Length: 268
Image (tube, rainbow, N blue to C red; front, side, top):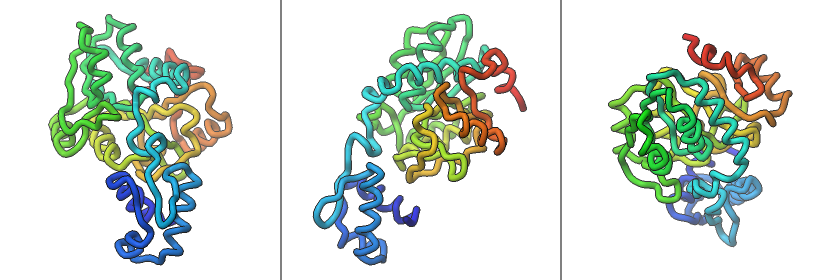
């Protein structure tokens, strides 16, 4: 399936809630037979539900998942990843934490180390709420349009505010990690904000539980070798980890030499 056509179909679906084959045929300049085949592939991947003459958005599987629900999926793995991620942070640093559910668990890791002073930049309303009363945390909340189901800010205002800031490290949650095709997201609006966060940070870390590996979605965030490291849990497939080493892609897990991670993360 053509990736650009897939992106346009899913963007329209995200905006309108439904798409019609006849309208897509006119706007995209391809046959209805081709589009029905495209919708069939997207249906099989769980990105939409086909109906007569078109398709409708699947709220629980598409762009605007409710992050509060996502927080408790693969809970122990996400908490493990969050602790490993915060082990990369040095005292006095400025870090960016995005609105992903795995990133949200970094609040607990931050709370557990009051001796480590840190400045946190975030677009997550839930994360900001969890860090409000921590005296060792200087908190910067990014403004903008509120994506209610994500409990986070996005849009042009958030993008512009991020451009005025700089950080030592950014921690970014994603939907898919494929060593060949790259790191991807299900949602186009979040793509721009996450990319902006990575642009203003010296070092970037992708937080992805092991279920995200081998999956690819419509919005490309970056190549798999672009971040400083991908941080995952101990259930990651050993073959995938071995392939990552061959490609010189850093993947951290709790089973790595955790005490050495801050040194690795400080590499220039």
